[in-house]
Length: 276
Image (cartoon, rainbow, N blue to C red; front, top):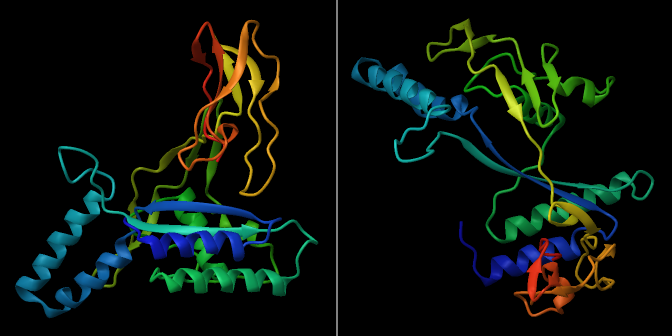
């Protein structure tokens, strides 16, 4: 994806003006294998036309279905996925009214639309479908939730009843019942085994500690928004014979805004990650 100066300026304005200082912003770039409904938009008219068009629709749908999990290229990963970006803004309970939250959402949507980026608001049913897509991915299924009850907590409605979770030291294993309802191009709904049915979830975060020879010696400065004061240097024990250094930031800020590390015997070791 590319962006011009106007797009970058609008994106910065979206974060600096539309989002309150006390809010937390979460971005989710999701590549969903659930593309059956999108492919059906192409296949259904040709299937109904009959003849050779029906045969082409069936063959191409099966080919794209296979590409949801198996790469369509021998040279690298090339899968059929639905690419979407989800942006959520949260504010601590009691710090904002529902009207203020609605205003933040509408402001972000209008800013994204000003740079020709289509943006839609998720309804409760859409959020439930997103969580179901993350916890139980599939090419196309018919057993997804289509209704939302205001009388029950939405958290209880997001996760399928047949989801099983195994917690391990470095990952989560999430599995679902493989026998699920699938609707074909003719409109018939049948139960089929959906594979894979077990998924491996791993979580990564920015390293907040500096290590020298495998020993944790100090932790990073906290991440900061533009305009906030940063205290120089990390907090913690500095290795003997070493001193804290900062590298030049690509945008020309003070070196405290760059990567941090320690200079020991004229070598920089324990380099961290950019602060901004």
